[in-house]
Length: 617
Ligand SMILES: Cc1cc2nc3c(=O)[nH]c(=O)nc-3n(C[C@H](O)[C@H](O)[C@H](O)COP(=O)(O)OP(=O)(O)OC[C@H]3O[C@@H](n4cnc5c(N)ncnc54)[C@H](O)[C@@H]3O)c2cc1C
Image (cartoon, rainbow, N blue to C red):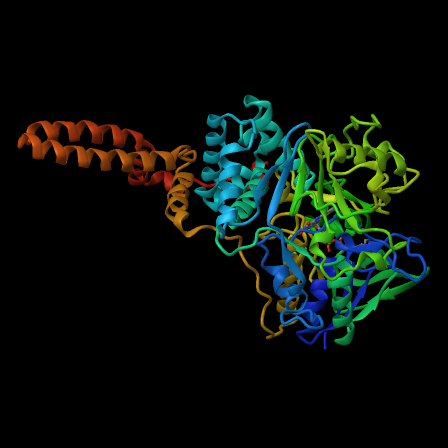
């Protein structure tokens, strides 16, 4: 039985262990921290549990499982949980709203899913017609067209062009109103994935945004799912039990300190377990730690043999970490996630207890907590604007708490009706990854930053199988269809690593399933059309969809008009003339299509080579 050693016990490492052990491999996982789950983990606030109660539930950052995830739910269904038919997957519950919260304005509450009840339809119409996004209609339609452009673009154009186009430029943010920039430029990138719109890849932002939008337009699909309890309790711990039961050897406090290489293959990996060094030997090695750790461990010899590992040093990370506020009473805020549009520190939050029906908070802490607002801070480098006029990364823990709380309050104070007040606050917990005092040797104060997909980063991201035959990668920075540093991306990377090991081991075991992102079938002809244009070296048709619709509408109206005139005048000349004029207008609107067809018939352009992103960078 081939032996696989996995280094890193986050979603990537645990997913790889799961797939391998189910295929008969002997597996060991080595995790540096004293807790499993990596960035997805939840943990207790140390010392907060009194009189035999559990520590208050804290986390690195809250968890969101969008409806378009396929890999992770598939794994979750295979992790048994008492009383659940589909394992820990059944511990996912769905939210019904997304809130856009602004200072000094009423929150905009958007139904999270396709409306299925009368009440939800009313709410949707209310939002559409009354919400004050402040974005002028022509800018909104321009943005909608941009989304249609992505939907109708072929894969090749997305990779060659949108991958290297900043989201900010793609949506023409600099020429638009402040509200457009705030919501569609900055809000969508900075708050959701800690990216700056000016450097975020349009391919990544656009693809993920479309997945979320398409989900919300599909009846029965839940866009926004969350766990029904603290993450480690309802997902990670049952997972570890399952893996141990299947004889996976699991080591905590086991930090990888070197990867040993003889010029051809990895010979061993040195791990420090509880302070003692040990050389781990296996047939295959999977690195499942984050990219910044990989960059520290990869030697020049390894880089020479595996050039894809030399490029990972160019990948960027950003700070995104959580803080939890424990309240005397439950304040639901909104039935889902909230985006604090005017917050200097790019806050998002969820009020958790409403989704935790079986969690009795009186059994945690000192028994007084009734509500938890879990907040992600996604901008640590812009100065606060309420009580501490410093960027979060320069603040003390207390200052981070004060400023975040003040920013929350400013957004939850609609017309003076305060949703939260200082009286509500009992305690708080900041992600222990933020190190105090700062300037820790080589991580600059944050133990676990998050990979961000900046423009052109696809070229620097490695495949799960690298050029060294017994070395594989299973983490969120690996090239995947998911293409975003998420739990879904980490799980997909693990499946790819396992499939590569199955191939290298000559195993006949069935391969792990890997899904593409969903692309709506109705757009397939347009994507095909765009592929031809792309191969001809032509730009995307731009307003192509509008033009096609306009052409069809004009021709349809013209047909009806002509029929009516014919029946009134009983003459054929006038209607024929009119039809010719209207058809001319319609076809002019559809000019880009004609131009492409002309190019197609010329044929020779079809052979023009497409510059791959690596070279085009
Ligand atoms: C605040 C925040 C909120 C997020 N929210 C979501 C969300 O809602 N939905 C979503 O899908 N994604 C979310 N993400 C992203 C997601 O958490 C990560 O992309 C994903 O968990 C990464 O998994 P991973 O296994 O690749 O890496 P990690 O989770 O980083 O796991 C790597 C593991 O390796 C260990 N390790 C590090 N160094 C060593 C070493 N030297 N030796 C051995 N082990 C080592 C680490 O301790 C860690 O356990 C969020 C991220 C952040 C930061």
